[in-house]
Picture 1 (spheres, one colour):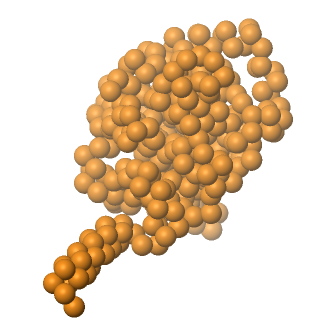
Picture 2 (cartoon, one colour):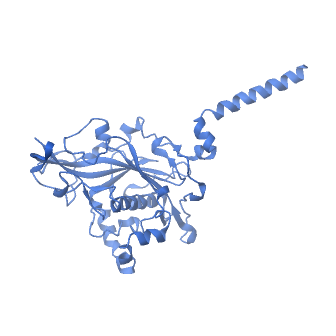
Picture 3 (tube, one colour):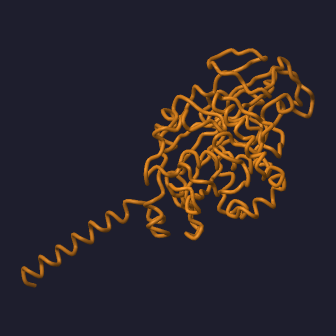
Length: 351
């Protein structure tokens, strides 16, 4: 073999080695399924040091025991929260057992909004197999026309972080069965989320609020949410974000932050309609979560985790993005979002 042939062979071998190194730097199975997907699904790094630094731990407070605030926080609990000092719930064997009331904001769920079907930033940027590109979402455009409509898929996770980290686990206060991080629902398998007309007919109350007076009244809800107040009676409104109906993944693309926030509220509303999200606020819920077909908006507050965390604050459903959303849209790399869902938890801590 001539020296020229040896040089060519060596160069070819070096190219193969370098190319193979790049190819297997990522998960081989993931790359084999869809190399394009694996490169475009972002990693939110949920289970990393960000689990400590990028979650608003202060948002758990204030905490109420026996109807009295005992620690932290300057905000008030929701209007529907319990003020009972003493409570009675069934203990082991169904025997009634007395306890005292406890109320606090529990970081209980994760909601991620993604454009690619199966993409999961919360699970390290993996792309779940079995989803077609024809269900691809979009963030919408910048002009108010037919091309301005955006669409996102959502994934709903159980996230009992207090229980996982063994931080504050009062007996009787974690009654929905969620013991670990777990995928509870995904919109890719929900035909109503991908079709506005089907979502309309599966939620018949949408017909009652699909008119100009009902939608104009949402301005009142928007004004209230701007100062941190929530109007549960106006269940069809999501404050300044838009309308709760239809409970589908299509929305007007005013901005990435506004759109993903609105779809988070709609997804929570859809979970309540299916009985997959419970009311944990109020005296009736002290012994266990109650099924509520309409979302109790005041029960929730939300904190962005990705792409840019609200590490020291949270906001109510419908609160204008001018209060919290500046600088939270990162082109290309940050057009998918992950939110931490806090819910007010009233429970009976038994003696």
